[in-house]
Length: 241
Image (tube, rainbow, N blue to C red; front, side, top):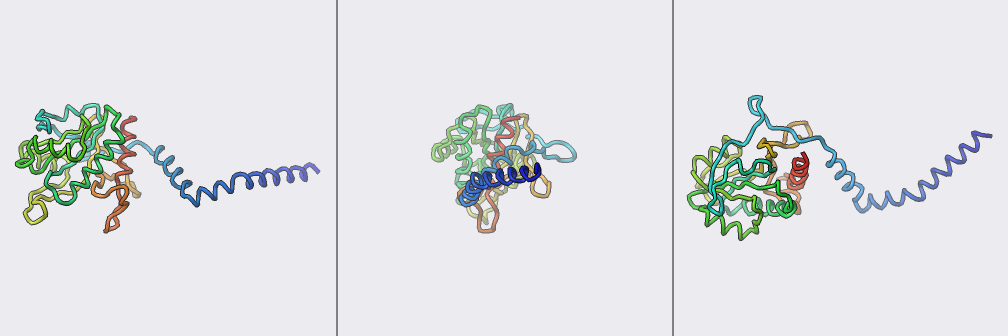
């Protein structure tokens, strides 16, 4: 008799659960919120970002010193204690740079209230991109963050910083639109100056973040997915370290 009553109570509980919760779950599946909500919870609990290694040593931003859009000398020390994104661009770029900097402006909006966040933009056409040109470019794109420096200086030092220091390709090429070729990648740096990134589905470090596709676009014609969303998530992780 006891087992019979136990069975009845269990059946009643299952019935009540179905009446109350199953319609809600079905509705979340229809709207897609069950996937979005659970994914955001998963991302928020991911392990800390990994370091990038070269010859078994953690890669750190090398020393640099360039003038910014306000003609102020900026070095790597100005970013001490800050999480920041690095890009290489040029103001007359007719292709990917406008998208890259529009993406960075969106990131700027999200982290506007964080004093320990910044952006470092290095021009690969320093002969043309003087501080005054960079200043006008900043105003055009709505670059307002005091810790977003658009920098110019010695040509060879900038190219060494890109190709050797960050291993982000940049070169002059008269055969491409605008006369300069570059990758459109963003590097992410932690508060201690180390390059950081998440790992991919195979456990390999992502290293860089694709800066040439917007969140609203989703993916490009080649099927490459936007990485601005995960960059934002990873910035938050480093800010919380």
